[in-house]
Length: 235
Picture (cartoon, rainbow, N blue to C red):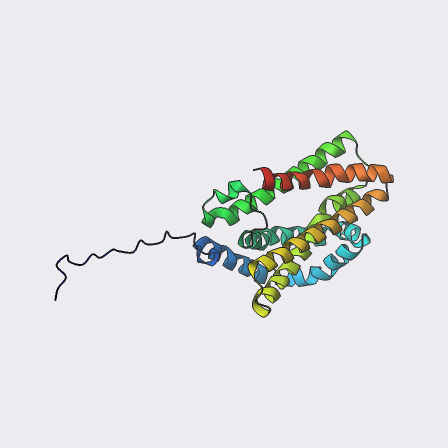
């Protein structure tokens, strides 16, 4: 017997589509492939320079020796520039730096935006250095000043290599969740920044007193770092 009132059919409301997965964004895939290609093209230079960079992380003297060799310094600068791309891809994927203004950007353009933020931070750091050295230059020769500014680059290249290895182990061998991987990458970043800060302090301490070293480090390293942290919290 048929229902005299008919049958009421309600179409289930479709759930709103969420943001695309990071790996589903075409530009992220393109940038990942580009990073892999660049890594392959400069792999021999990276392998050749990595032992010296590891020494720069563990001791202060190799930082000065590296600046003495123009060829090695140029190779280090090139590798550090190339390392920006994989670092920003990892930072975007695991939200190592996620201020509100980046959240407002289309997810497909956040990795390039992060590259822009990092470049802007490096320019700020260089500007602070120029202002400090113009106001009260420490008694450093050209190589010592270069090592003071660029020992961060040595630590950065080692950091990116370390983070890449940690990411591969945590994700593919240990199947760690994203939150754990994010914590690992953040801790490695903080530790390597601390190492760079220590090397800068050693370079300065050889030429100026302890209190002056502290003041120079506050101006040259802590002000740019504080600006980056403040941008993540406030903006």
